[in-house]
Image (tube, rainbow, N blue to C red; front, side, top):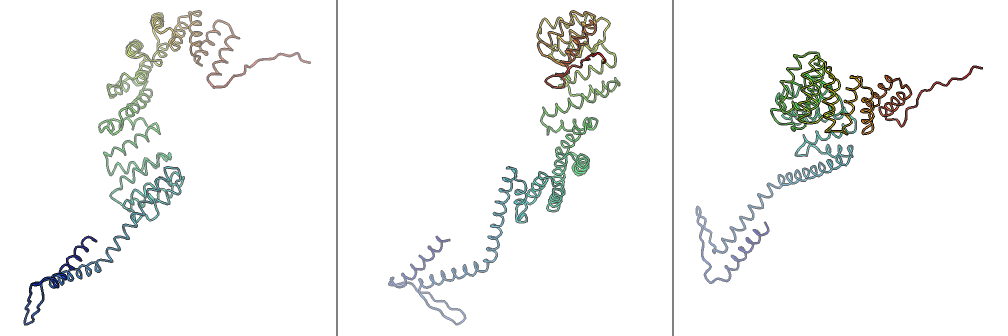
Length: 402
């Protein structure tokens, strides 16, 4: 603007100087309806420049109110943006009351009022005010009805975090009615099912989540394992249900030790000991699992000696495996090999003491009619089980009556 004004001023001064300095500065005659105007060329140029300046001044004066309004609006928007940034900073530092105030102060001047209201709702929940939280969410919906699904998902997320499970379920159902394939809604619904141990519904949700790839593969696999372990356990008395569940399981998870354990427990409950034993050995060849080796001792087989021989063969490769020593001891107990069982139990305890090993040793010592030693074993097992420094022994003190 300043540069343009200087150019015009220079031209005007040049025209004026030319009028006086040039010997022949030109001649202009304007004749309009009987009126004649005579002037030199420099004077005409000067008049044109002055006319241009006058028009510019009039135009700027005419637009001044609008320009002032725009400047005021930009100033308000800039201040609102500064408040939003400060509000998020306050929330990040844990000052939720201050953050909420900054986010909602002058929110109508903000370029993102929806985000302000949603953030304010989070701040209100962090302060434990659920009524104010819901009020901010309602204002967010009123501000931008097209973002209804986003508002509902935020509300469901906050309700879920606050363990308002029934309200969260109703909110998510409403969101899924609006957008049936919304992956965030499906994910939150899955988290709700996990919180409520609703495995049947989660079973239906997981395939839908896996198709879109919205949930990280590791997390999705973990949800599958938790769900199918619970379902297989609940269906242990229904062989057909167990088989159907196993077929529905993604192939790459059929080698998961926890899932294999759940399936083997179902096979044991069904009485299919040979299939269970073969499944354990196959799984252990692929990946050693303490959970599976402990299940091995629970197998009911006609030839218990064979089970023991296989366990002792594994011991040659893993002589310091506490779980395997415990299993070998239990199999010796079932084969009535008391001395051998005691040796295995004591070796397991020496490597890694556990309540289970102490309990097995106590049960064995009772069979061997060593009551005091059994009492000590049970005491140490209880001490480990309850995490106490020591569990006092109950003694009977006999005294003569006076």
